[in-house]
Image (cartoon, rainbow, N blue to C red; front, side):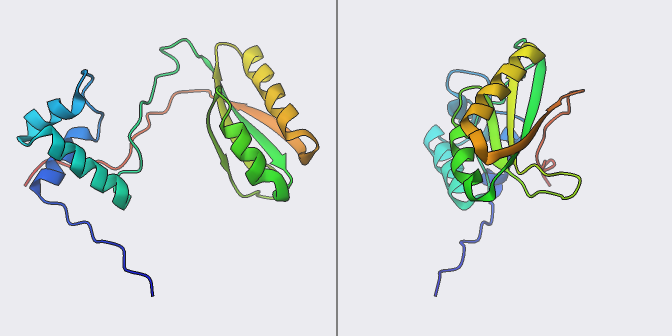
Length: 168
C-alpha cells in the first residue's frame, strides 16, 4: 500500500513566503537573503521551506521568465506537429532539448479539425527565423510527421498563477 501524500498546512511564515514570491523573486544578487530580511527568518530557512514546497508540488518550479519582446524577439511561433503516436514522446524529448525551443509538450488531437499532437514554442526576431527553426524541427521529426503549422502570437497575455491575498 502506498503512503498517503504529505499534507501541506502552511504556517504564517509559509504564507508570508508565498505572498512575497508569487509575483517574482527580488532582482538582487541574493534573493533568498532579501526575502529572509522581509519575512524575518534566516536565508537558510527560506531555502528549506521553498525546497519543501517544491518537493510537495506546492511550487511547480522556480525559474526566470524573460520578456521576449523586450529582448527583441518579436516573432513568437507555436509550431504544431502531427506526429505518429508511437514516436511522439521520443521525438518530443529531442525537440524539447533544442536551444531555440522554450517549451515543448504533447497534447491530444481534436479530430477532425485539429490533428496536431506535438507543440514546440520558438521565439525569434523575425518570422523568417521562426520558419527556419521550424524547418530544423521538421528534419528531426522526419517521416514520423504527417502535418505541421505555425501559430504566431498576435498579442501579449500576462502570465500569472494563483495569487494569495494579504494577511488576516
